Image (cartoon, rainbow, N blue to C red; front, side, top):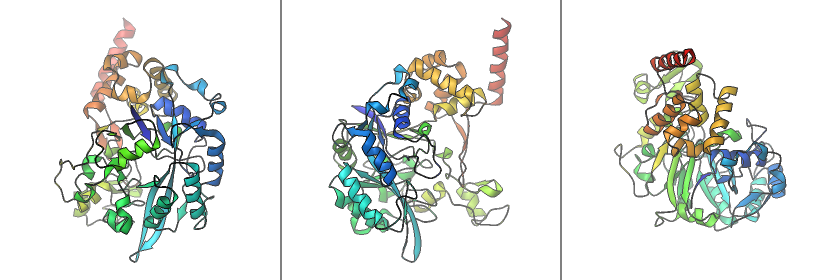
Length: 432
């Protein structure tokens, strides 16, 4: 069966996250977004682990479902058109900050466990290394290679995926605290790494430019800090609904059917796509950064080198080539952002929220609307400009001022002339 999975997110125990990041709201928003399997996140945190054990019950092998008594309060906000089964997988992101080869490394990794016993074993070993109660995503002075070893020792099906591998400050290949290769990061255990997470600021073609990544499949996840951000990136599976089946789809190089591909941001929208200096509001392409010798033209301080420049630094393959384990992908923009563009308002406004739920009630979950719903039915459920926005996103007809140094990119779907024409048309309809 085909389904979407978003396995990298956070709980309300992580810093700078929504208070609504509990299992109940994750269960609700997974259905609104069209996500079948979501990560629990943060299983290393003792408070969150207590909630997981209290509120979840076993479903298919290695997966869990929310007990019915915890769904009663939130399911009143669930349109019948979006109702679906949701499964949870035990996952947790770790921030590894350590010194290797006389350089401080800052790498985020996602750990996966097939059952609570394995998760508890991982927690126990990490608890002896650092404070797991301070943050849902703990900061540990632990080498990434050693974290992988701890995961592998907990169960044969436990695994690790390096998170958002290009992010400058906290990733395996990041410009500020990373390495130049997977092997340099994981050493003698590199063979146990089989998947890499693209992150919001890169997409598959950027990763395909590195021959050293040919042996890995690419996955995408939303890295949600609020339930509403679920599914902004996702991985598409076509397997039975179970942890072992999903594991096999990722890890077996001869399995060409279980992993269908990924849903991606337009990488320009990510916070670190281009180089730049946020304080001075300076955005630079890699070529401009080179021309300025890596310095901000406004203040003269070093700029944050983004993902595009870092990819170009390590790339050894031509643009457009596809490696042996490549999978299809599509770039999407979240529906609330498209509605906000059409209505010329903020994505968190009441207008956007009203239209968003109106469309869900009429058509179904967000992923269906963005990917598969006929454009004419989108127009009937929303309006002509929203429908045209979805069509343009599907066609890649999007203008984005690239994100840089922690600032998301700015999307433009419509020109001022198109907005003016729409306003005139609406005035004419009102007069008629």
